[in-house]
Amino acid sequence: MARRSARPARRPSSSSGPLTLPAELPVGPVPIDTGTAEVVRDLDHPDRVTLHVNGVPSSSIDLADPGFLDFEYMQQMAAVLELLPPGPLRVLHLGAAGSTLARYVEHERPGSRQLGVDLDARLLELVRSWFALPRSPLLRLRADDAGRALAGLPDASYDVVVRDVFAGDRTPDHLVGTGFAQQAHRVLRPGGVLLVNCADRPPLTTARREVASLAAVFGPGAAAAGRLAAVAEPAVLKGRRYGNVVLAAVRAPAEDEAEATGAPEAGSDVGHPDLRDPALGRALRTLAVPASLLAGEDATQFAGTAAPLP
Image 1 (cartoon, rainbow, N blue to C red):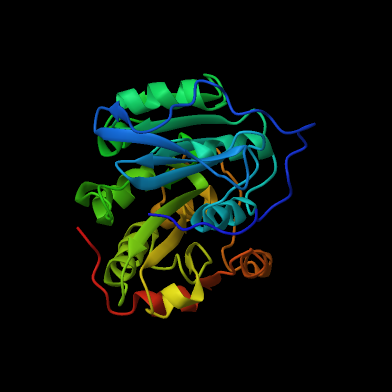
Image 2 (cartoon, rainbow, N blue to C red):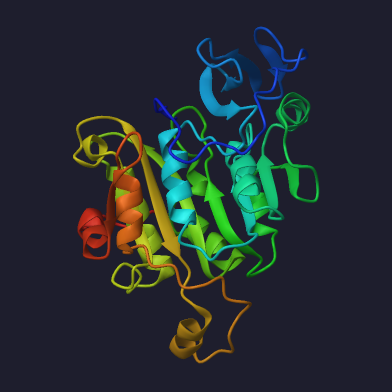
């Protein structure tokens, strides 16, 4: 569900030198609960590997540099995370796989507390042994259905929720639409960010309906307030080919929610990230594979007349 860039989007790790690939990395497919997993080495970069799950590239990992992100959609997500105030974050990853983004968050924001959820228990055991992942409690890995795990989490408990779950080339139905968005909104702290990896084909019907679903849950004024955006390569947004569209939605700040509902402020406030921030647009345009940002009125126009998914 991902494409890869020619070079990292951000600075290299401060690691003192390259690490040798662990001898225990397997050669060839390994059985897991949902099929097979295979670690494919990068012949040009001996410290980099790609985790294939059932033959599909799922995670790209630099064992020597946890700050390296290879897949473009992860670079785009990382650019959005830069809008949040400095310091550790509480991050929920729905779809853990190789935990590449979790390694990145810990590298950039030491002390972050993260939970990775994946349906495949055996895969989680293997990636713990294969890759240098942050240890619990910095990164906890839970074998569970992503929707069930999300529904069981406390209100206002995470700064960031990342949805990166696929069955084949599409996200399972129970993890899209307003039902999923409501649960993610509930779990986010005020000012928290939901990041969604949506893979779609022209004319991007699913992506447009997902934006409409997020707008329905995060508030009719979310786009105008800079709390709703879509990010992708220009060719994808123009409907020229299949690709990843990153959707971002920000829960309203606590004082705004309290004013709108008359209820007491709920939970601590993460900050006031504005997805219209010109710095975000510049960061996306200067990636190895440049991406376009649709925020504000552009996000509204992208959704158009698309109906929210249930």
